[in-house]
Image (cartoon, rainbow, N blue to C red; front, side, top):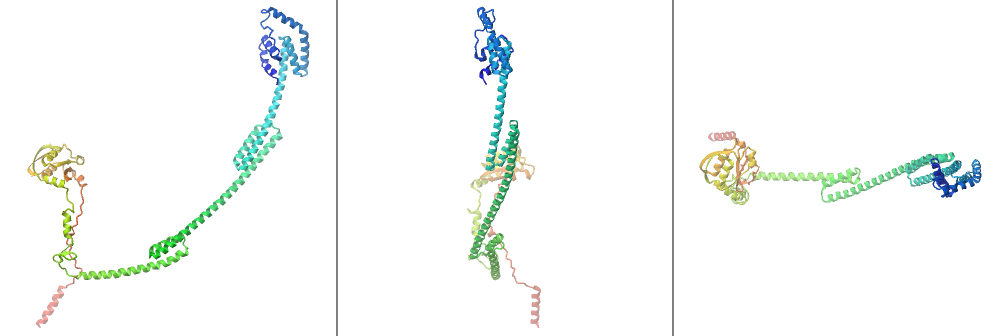
Amino acid sequence: MNRSFESSASFILPLRRSSVLSTLIAATTIGGLPFAGLDTAGPSTRGGASNFGLQAAVAARPVQDTDRDAAKTAAATGQWQTALDKWTAVLNANPGDKEAIAGVAAARAAMDQGSTLSGVDAEYNLRRDRAKVMFEADMQQTQEFVTAGNFGAAKTKLLAARSRLDRDKAFLAPTEYEGMAKQIDDTIAQVTDLETKSDLQNQDQNRKTAAGEAERLRAAATTARQRQIDEGIRRVRQLQLELKYEEALQVVEELLFLDKNNPSALALRDVLEPLILFRQQSEFTRQKEVGIVQQLNENVAAQIPPHRNLSGPGLRSLSGLMQYPEDWPQLSRMRSGAAGWSESEATRQSMMDLRKTISVNFNNNQLDQVVAYMKQVTGVEFYPDWKALEAISVRPEDTVTLQLNDVPAEVALKRILEQIGSDESNRPQYSVEDGVVVVASDESLRQKTLTIVYDIRDLIFEVPYFANAPSFNLSESIQQGNNGGGGGGS
């Protein structure tokens, strides 16, 4: 399109809103012919210039009529460019000519419509060519997806191509559209068929792979089981050499669990079971014989009369009736000597201090004051366990009333503790631990009890039990005596 026409077209609408100014703008832009000498202010501003314009317009009027007729003829025959040129010449001669302005507008409108129609044809052809190119590209990409085995992407691409084809249907000839749509539908069917066949092939391949893997695993399991059986048989033979028949039979049972029909394991079991029975029989016979000999020995030993044993081997005895361990002196020393258990030096000293003679005179004195007094007069450290005492409702502010003269401190302490509590269950007690007199509940003190085991074999007398003593029938003996005496008298 001519750019002078394109730029002048923008002034067609303003021509309808202005009169003289619009005419001057169109006149100065159409065809590129400037008319700077024209004055839009009217004849009152520049008298000389206005007269010159009027004279030029009168001189050019015959030319205007010729151009006007030529413009009308060209417009009637559709020669719009010629009509536009003639109407422009008329406007150049007479800028205010309304007929010329209308002619220019009509010529321009006709020319613009033709250009628009030409552009529409070009756009139509462009869209049609683009639709074909996109179709070919989609089909090519679909083929690439199919070659790669990506059937899902191929079908997606075909569906998108079909949607685009339907959208561009207006730019294609009916035969073109139908042919392209059929090609897409046929390709979709082919891709679906290929996908189905591919799935079937994949499933078949997967089944073959799974079957092969299962067979491989079975073969590996069989090999491992056979290797385990071979190792077990070697183990059984080694145990046989070591005469460990019970352990060997256990290994054979494990082998038969793996393979119940294994001939080697079955044969070994038939050999081992009789061997084990024979060994058991031999052992039982030996134990019986040993037991008989032991019993005979015990019977002979029981027939030995009691006798004194002061320095010989075996149990010691002074009379033959009472017997003592051979090491009884050592046992006695262990109970009381350095080898046995004894109180610590601090505890023994505190117990000696508690035997000191003291006097007490308490008149409603608090328990904590009483404890402090006992600590002062005895010189022994006292520790009242108030937490344990509180569990039996004994508190520091409980009072004590007691008067004693010249009594051991331990006696005074016992009498003091008897004043606290209502009965034996909630009465405090005391014990000496590591030189400290601990006053607490009975339950708390029992938790610190020390268990000591002594060997007192030398203090125990075992009364002999004569199970094999002879049986005496007193009446029968008397009768035999009477019979004997009577015989002598006769």
